[in-house]
Structures are given as structure tokens and as C-alpha cells.
Picture 1: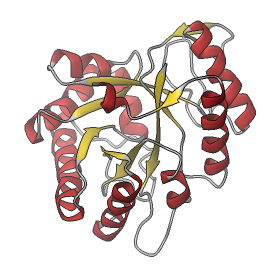
Picture 2 (picture 1 turned 90 degrees about the vertical axis):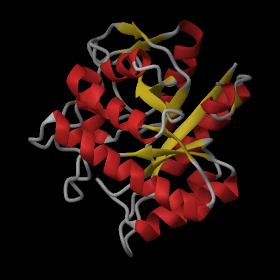
Picture 3 (picture 1 turned 180 degrees about the vertical axis):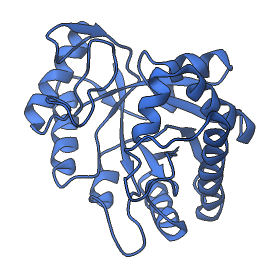
Length: 254
């Protein structure tokens, strides 16, 4: 079996950095690059795209609510038309920087609160999909497994791939547990790796309520915005490869 390992990278701003991007680029096969909504700026985008090119890592755009102060983790009171426009603006900015850096953007994956809202609400999911189609119908969508965004991208005829999270808790609904709730984030790399191995054996992900839900997985996300991210990604990659899973970009299997 082959599986992709992705992380949210390029999440600094100006002179400030977030996480250890150079180390993460040595571990992941796909990178979701911030494009000005929750983090980043032209120089950060260019540096991140250049690192991706040097490491031969596939790049996706990572748009969010335009909320740098909240790191894109707050839902803003905006309508679907505005969502459609700010997603187009952010993805378009990364496409421009990618042309300068010589490394293409090949998919779109929403960030934070935008991803969570699009997972549950069809109209928001469809607004994101409309933006992606308007920019480039060859762009794929990476969506949380079993969500409205996954379904909307499929209905629109876009290539859509499903992801699961190594370090986030799941509710019985299939949604990610809100970060403010117990069990939302897994900090122990061994526990995260063991949960993934059980998932690949069974196809079912445990939930905080005590049951399990069946999910599809083309890619595994490891968050890159904390000091333990490199250790987490390194341990997960080592454990999965040790069990015979090949780590490769999901778009190589398209």
C-alpha cells in the first residue's frame, strides 16, 4: 500500500517563523502552503515553494478565512460569495509565486475553521469548489474524508482525494473534535502512530465517544505548527514504512 504524508507549511509571516519547515520538507511528500489568509506573505510563499522544489515535494494551496490574528481558526461572519472571492485571491497569489519559484501548485486544501465549516456545510464547500474550478480545473482538492467538501468536489468533476489526521481526534459525526474540547489533539507520537496502524488494519478510526467510523485515506496530515511536529512526522513515517507502507504523493497515484 502507498500513502501520502502532508503537512501545513509556510505558516510564518515576515521575520516570524512557525515550525521547522526545512526539517518537515525532508519527511512529507505533500505540503499545504499558506497563502496569505491565516499566515504568510510573498517572501514566505516564495521561500516555501523553493524549499518544496528542492525537496521534490508536491505543493497545494492552503487558503483560509482572512484572519492572521486568529491563525484562521475562527469562523468569520462572511457569506458564500465572499468566501468564493477570498479563496480565489489566496490561491491565485500562490499560483503567481509558484510561477516565479518554478514549482507548480497542484491541489487546494482549506485550512482551519474554513476546512471545518466546509466539511459540514454544503454551500461553503461549493463556494470553495467554484473558486478552484474558476482558477484551474486541473487543480485537485484534498478534503477531510467523508465531508461535504469531498462530495462537492466530486460533483463538480474535480479530482478529489481524502485525508485523515494523524494528530487530531474525531467525533462520531466524522468531523474533527473542536480544539477547545478534550481529545482534540494527540500530542504523543507513539499513540498517533499506533492509531494509524490500527486504522490501516481495520479501515475504522476511533472516536472520542468510544465508537469508530469508517474513512477513506489517500493522505495523512501531520500539523507542522508546533515544536513536536518534526518528531511526530518522523516517528509516523518510520512506523508506517516499517509496516510495509510506501510513502509517496497522492497525486502520483492519480
